[in-house]
Image 1 (spheres, rainbow, N blue to C red):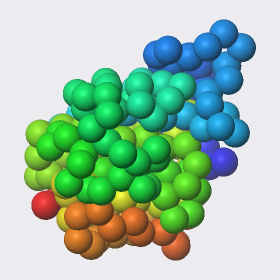
Image 2: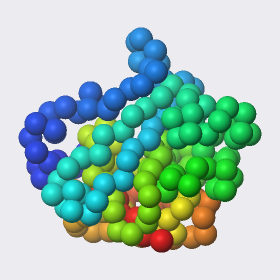
Image 3: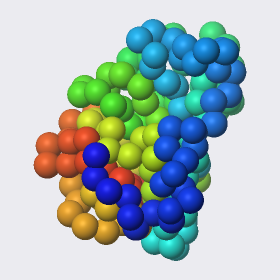
Image 4: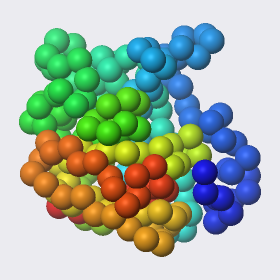
Length: 180
């Protein structure tokens, strides 16, 4: 894993404990193969560039994540974000990022109001884990290797609902930016 010296030292020390686990059973079991079903709020570009970290909230089931996004039980027929139709997601779901290729494994759903250049610095628990991205409301997503939208970048684009695997920054993403 790459050094996080650009991240304030106090946050770097938090490591995996920085993630908030809602509805997480005692002992840490997070569903099939310890998958995490997380959501995070998009930040302003100024907050990302200033080094603020977006803290995810995670759930032990996909259904609980959907409920936290305002999706009524039974509305979504899919059992995973990779299988759910893009139009079934609430309008504030901008993208989903996965730790596996092709939209597999644990994931984090980014929520917000628009795709105008805002983004996020990943928490220490998600730093250097992302391998694929699903475009839900944002057609262009720029993945950065370093904190604050710095360093080398890889852009994914596609129609809404498209899942794209990362290539040059596979498991090297630290901050992300969203555009229409």
